[in-house]
Length: 396
Image 1 (tube, rainbow, N blue to C red):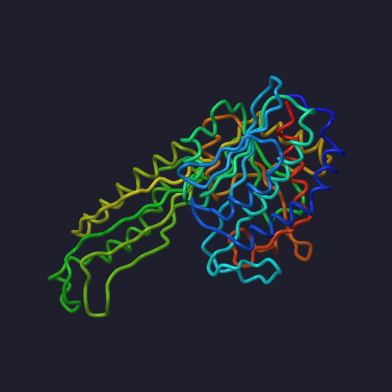
Image 2 (image 1 turned 60 degrees about the horizontal axis):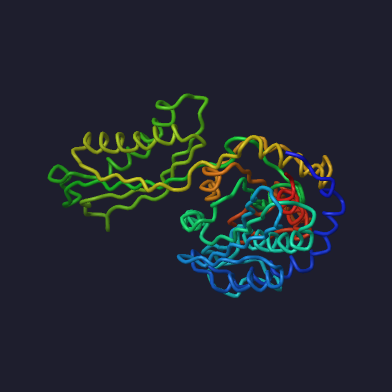
């Protein structure tokens, strides 16, 4: 890969010149957040922002996605740039002029900034299409927060002809404006497991006449951890958390069943499979040890997000060319959050990078994290993201 001379101060200044439009779109989307795969208001705002840019636009059939192609008419790679669109089911408690107008819905993960940065990058690239070759595909994706929106867009052809892909995710716990990434696994897989323990209910004063499912469920909580400590190589990382237990109705009734559920997260697909098998084994064995039976299910979530090494290295070099050496930091280790951009990276080489948006009045260690009801971003960093989207598209 080569870094064009056009990537540098002039490109960053062009992104800075679009800052007002970027912030305006971000705040408009923030004030009217939507959840899931059907985001008609957000889609309309995106389409309005792309008007007049000479893009070939395709709307999703199963979702309210937007795919927009910029074709220079000259031979070259097709580069996909992705921004996710959806919000979270959370009440916003930070007051601002653009606070969410919709009760119980909030852009608490920064997807509003992703859309705004990508839309401004589309404008910047459209106005400078003579500076690069090939095609740019802008992927505005709904349903990242647990709805597998990327899969729907892939099924509808968003990756057809794509040579490489790139995405940005904002993070408040990273210094403002700093870009960070690494090769290999950067985010975890995320699966949900459920276990229902079946016993025999009765009077709590006569447990010998019952088959109590509660001790079996309680023991499972601890026994599941032996999968992590005994089935895995100690150098491998994984999290298995039981987050919800439910059983019984009152103090003097032994219930007929007990329910528990939780999450499984890891950075390796083989480890993921090992844990899945272990959950079923431990659940069934523990239930049987208490004269119970059980039903255990695992709902697969997002795969491990794995950056292509070459594309991660390209991201680092492009960032340094755009922002200077101090604008980039190597991500020290993967984190246990999950992302459905993983579906894209499973099929084409690419990378995801983080953009620090820590507010000026707190340190990164003090900032409210993504998914907080007090989540807020430092908008002054957004033109760095606009510039990086554009620069990654232009690098060839």
